[in-house]
Image 1 (cartoon, rainbow, N blue to C red):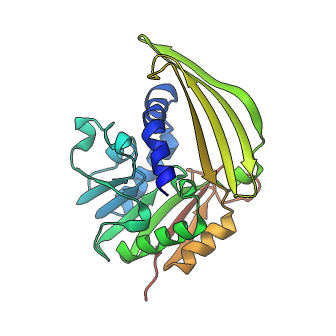
Image 2 (cartoon, rainbow, N blue to C red):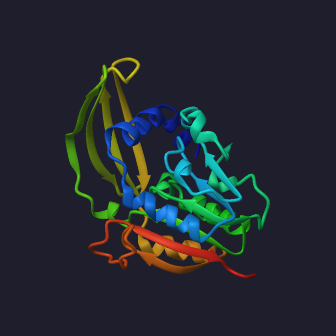
Length: 252
């Protein structure tokens, strides 16, 4: 896990710039999580909260906790973002929280795929079940479609320039089936990069829907429902762009 965290120390600021400045906000995604935060008020934890781009938009509740492994991502938070939010540096496999203390846990934006080892993911699900109150809810997002994504070589994703700041991304996509990974080789260049260019290799776990749901069930939670997109459309293995699930802590 240490290698995954180390990667984000360098990649985090570039990812943050992409999400905040280059790509437009996905309002369907934002409203999805806002609606569930309203529905399940109380103590809320967001896993892999990054620079707070989503956490800061969650409606007020009794408490919002942002857990993030990367120091550089936590360092990207603004003063406004930090208001009313408790930030903790840590990982989902070792939650520094009391058992049965949370009403809602969120794991958005394919964060599950950043935990490369299946046993580590199982441990994270076990930790989540432990910190949830009885009946507490877990909402997560994954992309089983990574299995079938086409490989690409040196595709230009964007060439951004605004107010004297520039960033260009050339990306290749491949699969490492022996290790169960999809690999994004990213070449960044421009004034936003300290040395003018940096190469980032992002590895994400290939996780099937069946594997994900079974692991969650086996580690102390019950699947309530799954959707195929932020509009709550039914999950379809062939056509859904993502898998969104709602689970709850199972009574012992």
